[in-house]
Structure formats: structure tokens, C-alpha cells
Amino acid sequence: MTDQSTCVQNLTFDLESYLQARKAIIEKALDQSLPIAEPPVIYEAMRYSLLAGGKRLRPILCLATCELVGGTIEMAMPTACALEMIHTMSLIHDDLPAMDNDDYRRGQLTNHKKYGEDIAILAGDGLLAYAFEYVAAQTQGVNPSSVLRVIAKLGHTVGATGLVGGQVLDLASEGNPDISLETLNYIHTHKTGALLEACVVTGAILGEASEETLAALSRYAYNIGLAFQIIDDILDITATQEELGKTAGKDVEADKATYPRLLGLEASKAKADELIEAACAEMSPYGDAGVPLKAIAQLIANRKN
Ligand code: FPP
Ligand code: MG
Image 1 (cartoon, rainbow, N blue to C red):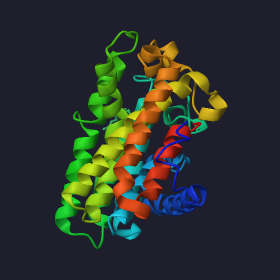
Image 2 (image 1 turned 90 degrees about the horizontal axis):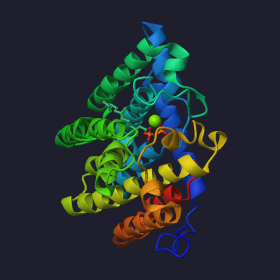
Image 3 (image 1 turned 180 degrees about the vertical axis):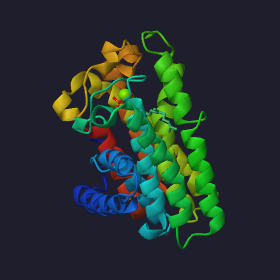
Image 4 (image 1 turned 90 degrees about the vertical axis):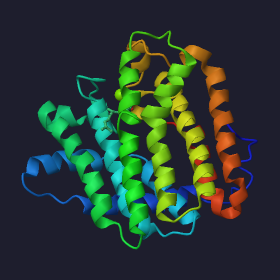
């Protein structure tokens, strides 16, 4: 995918080392963000899912855009951790029996399988609340009005205007695969795209980006967000449980509308490639500074899990 693209031209950039280094500092920051306290069981359950690995794509994006606009990693790290807390809580709740009823996530038992449904619900709630506290209490060296803007953005992203709204329509579409492409795009851009957009935009807000740059980054994020979910739909069909670290074939089993179902596999891949190209094009004016974000876009197109 995307072999001839504007994305690859510059890639003397060593994406693998970049991602590895970023992942290491993020893992450390996440570990330190949430020490065990009383009552231990809830902290253990929160840490169990928060520290279960994963690509850490969301915090990496937040740090990358802060740096792109001249900010530092330190300015964005509390928000980067908060975004991973929010992502993790959304997956804990998504996996519950009342929603997708999944047993495996990131290669290990889901939170409710390990701790029970009651604790899993509370672990999700705890992570969500702590994410907001963490941004407000831990962000340093940033204009307070920018921190407030980030907090408002996070609220808008997780609520009915974002993840919650997307998840409601996603659940309603189970057993109803004949929904329109417009509704499917709504689900994908809200359930998945909104949080990726928040990662990209909050990093840039913390780095005091101009409104013009924020708009370009928001368009970049829209494109990678939709592409990410189209690839997710494709992998649900083409990848194995071992590759994914979670149950494969769930969309077909739940009779869900997906891109491959509406457009076919080839056209879905083509659409994802087109979106990645568009995302890279948004970064072209930023020259070398935009290369990490182009490379991350490409990674999304080529991901296997
Ligand atoms: C995974 O999708 C789930 C999401 C991307 C988000 C789900 C959102 C919620 C449960 C709402 C969370 C609540 C708040 C307050 C943020 P999927 O089921 O398509 O993918 P999967 O195969 O990885 O489970
Ligand atoms: Mg799910």
C-alpha cells in the first residue's frame, strides 16, 4: 500500500527507532502516572489495562504535533498519558458483555474477564476521571488558557459529540449491515477518528500552534482516523487472532456494516490509501518537521494489527 506516495519520498527517516524511543518514554511516564494506592484492586485493574502494551500511537501523535509546532515533549506528556488513559478506558468498556463482549485485548484477558464486570466498569470510570485530573494537575510550562482549551477538547472528544456518540450508532448497527456509507463514516469518524484528532490537535494546542496549523493538523487527523478504522475493518477479515491480539472476525459474526462489506476489500484498501495520501499532503508544507507525521500516516496504512 501507498508505495508510490508523497508519504515515502522522504523516508530516510528511521521510523522504527523513532517509534521505539517514543514508546519507551511513554511507557515509563504511564507507569509513573498511576501508582498503586487504596483500594489496591482498582489501581491494579486500571494499571492492568493501561500498561498492557499496544502501539501507543495516540500519545506518540500528541508528542509529535507538539514538537512539530515548536513545543517540547515535556509540555505534552501529561496530555499524551491522559489520551492513552481515555483510549484504554474506552476499550475496557467496549469489551464489556453489555457491548462487544470480548475476552481478549492486547494479547491478554480483557479487564472484566480478569477482575469481573463491576471492577472493570469502575476501572474505566477511574481512568476517565483521572485523565482530566492528570492534564489539569500535571501540565507545566504551558499557557493556562491552552491547558483549558485542551481539557475542553478532551471533553468534547469523549462525550456524545465524539466517542460515546460513535459507539451508540456502532452498537445500533449490529445485525443491520445495510446502513449507508454516510452512517458508517459517522461511526468511524466519531468512535475512532475523534480521539486520534484530539491527540493530534491537543499536542499542537499545547505547543501554541497557529489556527491555520491547527486546521491543517485536524484535516490530517481526519484522514488518518478514517483510514485507521477502514484498515481495522479489513484486518478483522484478513488477520488472525494471534496477529491482532484480540478476537478476529467479530464484525462478520455481529453482522456489522464495515467498509469491506459496503465497498469490497480492494476498494476499501484503495480508499484507505487515498486518505493516507491526503494526510501526507497536509504535512508537505512543513518540510522535514512534518516527516514523522507522514511516516506515522504510512504506518497506519501498512499496519498488521
Ligand atoms: C473499539 O472499537 C472501541 C472504540 C474505538 C471506542 C468505544 C467507545 C466507547 C466504549 C465509549 C467510551 C466511553 C467514553 C466515556 C470515552 P471496535 O469494537 O470496532 O474495535 P475492537 O475490535 O478493537 O474492539
Ligand atoms: Mg470491540
